Image 1 (tube, helix red, strand yellow):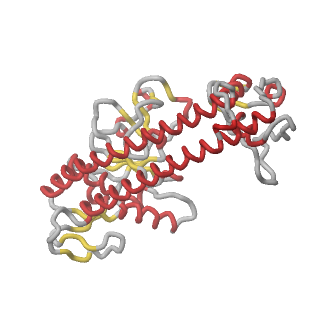
Image 2 (cartoon, helix red, strand yellow):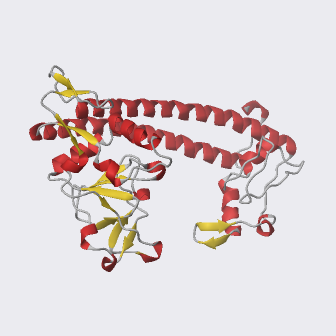
Image 3 (cartoon, one colour):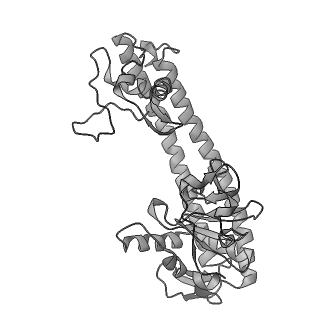
Length: 343
């Protein structure tokens, strides 16, 4: 379904099939038509492969796919109409994206304030000695992640996909962690208990960090031990003395200070990689135990409100995306007739 009419002259990799479209087709109309679900479904039916993985569409199969072609003048009307409507919908989506970005920035600022400056506005501050953290309350201290964890940093299991099964111990991979740090409910893989040493079983309060690729810095907190879970090799694990401390460190991993540190580590390396040793030496501002609990409680309540607002904006955005796709499909397949006065 990755189809498009090129507006440029150039070359592509062998993964693509390249065609010159017939004079019977308006290029702008074809751009919408060939990307429509009606057409994509036919590509899938005509391709070879197992399930949805590594499907290949070959020319002998592709050439026999049926294409609905309205008269040329009608194609032009359709293209103009869809361009107009798409611009309107895209503009609305961009406004929603800007609102989401603003809310995310406000969230980040709030996290940074609570996790590096505390709850009191008038408390005496001192220099932390770390540029990307700045000043911290005088009664706080700076420590390293390795001094807070009750175990040495632990790398996950390197297990081939051949060992995956439909039930057993859930095997967490980077792809199972959503952008907000929560775990996906669907699409998980499992391992037989015999393939997972007991020291790799996750416990409540464990914190996992992604250590490589474009997901470096992504983290998830294990909030329950009801489901048996283990973790893959591109993740590293830390474990803490108390659940409150686990929550605090996890919240810190959402702060702009933490992400400044992540970007600093990446720019100092030839590849996007923050290994377990680097995570172990991450500096963290640490308040007294009673203050940790209070910060966690107040911050999580405020973040819940932000998350609810952001979720509503994502629902609006997804509705517009679905509406745009539905509109395109209805128009290019003739379910909605386009006339001059609609443009």
